[in-house]
Image (tube, rainbow, N blue to C red; front, side):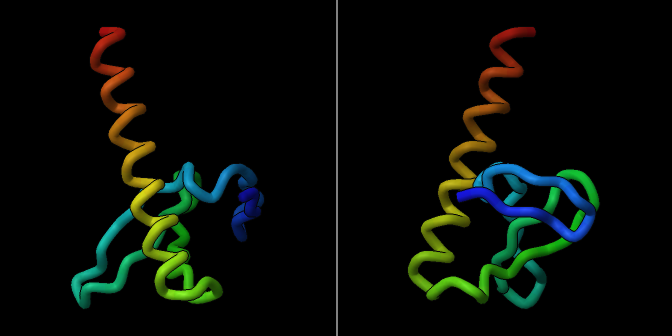
Length: 69
């Protein structure tokens, strides 16, 4: 699923950083500007799945960086 951030960055919505706010709300952070998308435009279940997929993608890219070093 492609998206465009307010800063103009475009890309796969799962390529953003998953975070959990102090109040427990989950969001995806834009890697360019830091804008938070709480995924409220999606249903709760779909939003949680997308947030989890972003986390798995981040873990994989970190593993690739460490193995290449």
